[in-house]
Image 1 (tube, rainbow, N blue to C red):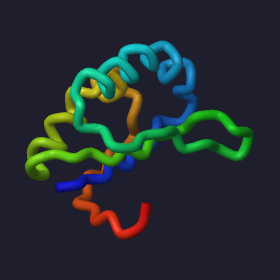
Image 2 (tube, helix red, strand yellow):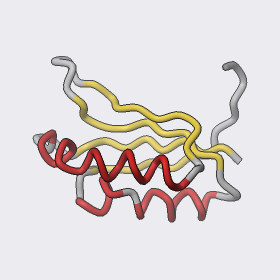
Image 3 (spheres, helix red, strand yellow):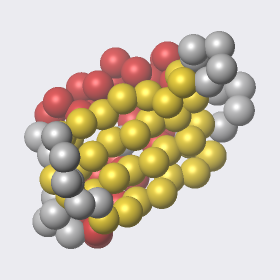
Length: 90
């Protein structure tokens, strides 16, 4: 199943994001479940959140994946929304 993660950073945490970005990208690569991923951008073009699409067995697997993301472990996110998602185009 596909699951979308909509993660919004805590305000003023860009430096935390940058400090944990390498570990986050390594986690995306090593887990092998990420189909698409990228940051949300604020009005100035700065990263302020993440959108990820995972291909996992169930919502529990997606929630576990999200909890183990280095960004989450560092306390970067103000919120994480985990939703089943259906691909229609692309």
